Image (cartoon, rainbow, N blue to C red):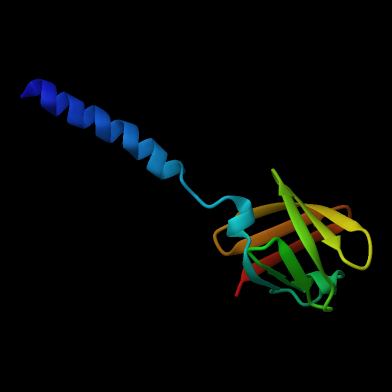
Length: 109
């Protein structure tokens, strides 16, 4: 009986850390429509970004392309012009993009 109880407790202790660590990868978590709360941002095109599950994005100005996430780096590879790389943090419904002379905070819509 004690041996069985010990095995049950050990099994629970092994499962809990894995459950606590399971979350969507950034590529999945970023999918959705994001909008700025501060409409005075100098980078207004970035104040509306939509990311889809196929790795595509669309900005406020109608420009589209592919997005690539590598760690905390987000690269927006536009169809019509060169890529833009920024650092991002994703917390719940808040997406923060930072780069040289750039700090944009968006919320999930």
